[in-house]
Image (cartoon, rainbow, N blue to C red; front, side, top):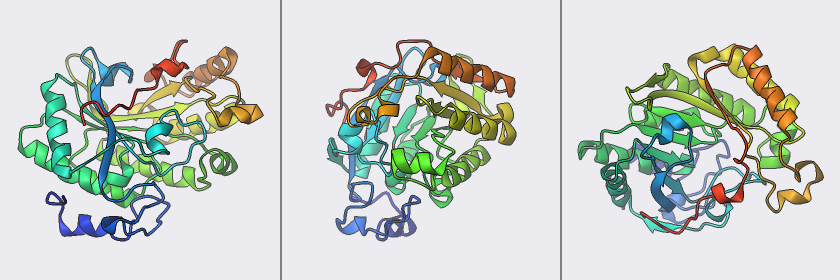
Length: 307
């Protein structure tokens, strides 16, 4: 099953320190890590996804693989079926490389790896095999940014576009909503490594991003001050060397709806204020959302398609 990995990558799975949890689980021998997964690759969906940023999805769709398990515990997660509940199918690393090729053959603009952190060694191996077999479309790494820099360095030269979240600045907020009080300090380092690997945003002739970093920030109801600190950090650290995707698609699903301050959607005034603040900081490269994004219908059906 691990024929595509080298010794150092295999060792990463024996005492897992791939993410800041550093749980030390022997995932290689069947122990379950904080992420809820052993070392066996598991995914819930592989298809042409049309609802990413326009420079990712384009007209033909992004060849997206949704991996099962997650090293975050976001109480408002829209993908809980796979991130918390482990839905999906087990596959080999060799099968993953074939999935990449199948998505390319279907016309995908890129390969889009969603929640990949806990599978980076296997993904790196599968990407090397696929590239050797003719994979030529860009590879997008779509993550929470809650990961170790050493893990990201395993992907150097394999990933073309980084699409990280930058969720929180405040430690109490990240602890309360995602069980990760050290989120920002680790995510900030991770984003810095991503920018180091892909320092320039480059679109192709059709406007599809082939190199660069887009940082996503999901606006949460009642937490505009925290969002502004994230925007200030991005402006001071990178300016328009990274693009911003400011998202208003927060949806109060159970159990988060039981928390009074999180039981509503983001208001128009909250979101509009943050858009204006981003522009005032000079962050004018990227994307905003206009209504209709906070809908349950935008949550994929994790039915095993393409796996």
